[in-house]
Image 1 (cartoon, rainbow, N blue to C red):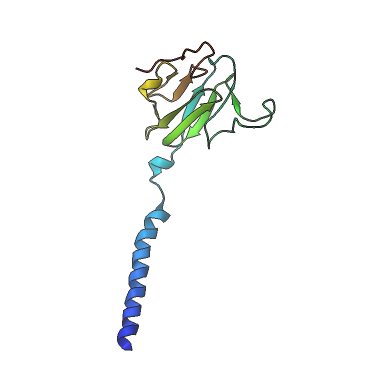
Image 2: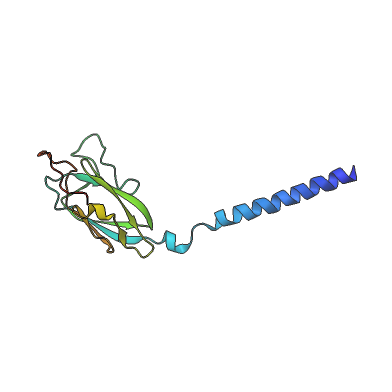
Length: 144
């Protein structure tokens, strides 16, 4: 019986030590660089006709029921967002694309969007295209 009790105590202690090693990093959270918010300006004012846009999880949704009373941001004015380093998406009703904020607070945007979006390496995201396929059937941009 003493061997069983000793074995159970060793298992209990081992389990507690093992769980402490797993829980400690979780409790510590992310490094400070990942929690620092950076000021990012979104300029979609050249989109014509004007519309609404969002950055999901950060700004109000564009999918409200009444366009005149919804809180989503319009393309008629610049907006300043506080974003942590990470991946995001600009979304309008007709055009969306991914972008990222790096550890230095600068924008990272795929080169394939250069004809519609600018601001890579800066803190200002400028969106020029209103739709992927305009009504004329031609894209506002070309893949390279």
